[in-house]
Image 1 (cartoon, rainbow over the protein chains, first blue to last red):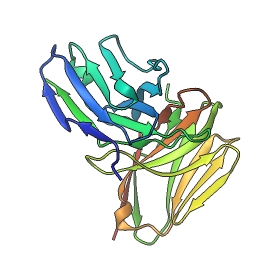
Image 2: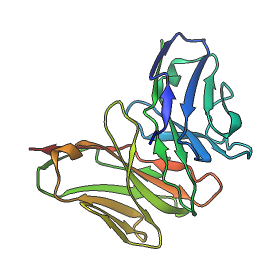
Image 3: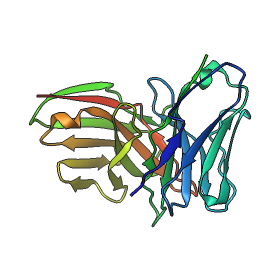
Image 4: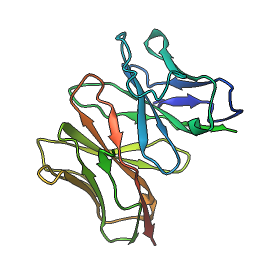
Length: 115
Length: 113
């Protein structure tokens, strides 16, 4: 079956521009997460969506970052006025949240380079 | 402050031998632990997990051990195969609505033929 997909796979932008990253989760998965991985680092949690509940934005590094999830499915992560420190791989994951534990399934990521 | 630590950035093992990857954590609220494998240009792939009520979980060649008193877990791969060469991330999750994963920085495993 189809896994988590993300687009674009690569994005190069100039400092100060806005970017939008897209995530299509696994069909039927109610939980959706965004993470980012900076060079040489582990994955860092950014934001979490569960069904129609208000998102958990506790991991967003600044107010330049925002995310939406429309219709409980596709999600878009927006970074406004990009800075060079925003350069990273942005990963989306989804989970069915069955039971108390969640195994998250990751997409291939979007590599963002801010020049 | 890193709550999940993988102190070995790299590990090389001969094919057929055992690979042991280690992970330490500091947050005693973590109750679920996972290992992910990552190949270049791909997202992490779930490998194996363990709940804090257990001390061992086995799946084929992969076994995860949890020592709660030491706040330490390890992943054993036996026998190691060249296709196991990848970056391995340890991750942990605490009770709560989000259950977001906190990741270590990863260990690059190279299995030599």
